[in-house]
Image 1: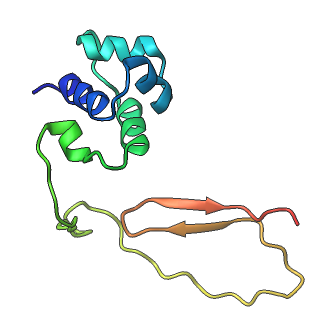
Image 2: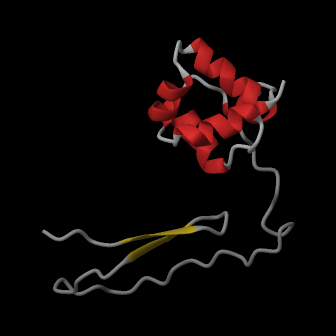
Length: 120
């Protein structure tokens, strides 16, 4: 079964028309039409919108046609993917009248997120 067939099943299972489905997930009706006809393959954003809009849809099944269950377990160590070791931050005394400019959180997988203070 192709991915466009699985999308058709989701539409049918939710008793929606193609137009209602496109509106529900927030894509252009023509984009859905192109995917369903096989003219275009759905992109990551398109598939993400389906998964976000229909939480009962198994992402693995949508992508591959095989429903997987279980927990993700990381099997790759930092040395195997050649990432630098994680350094501990040095602690610095902060004066009580200092203002925070930005907080950056570094994750073990090499990603990070920045957080700016909100105006009060």
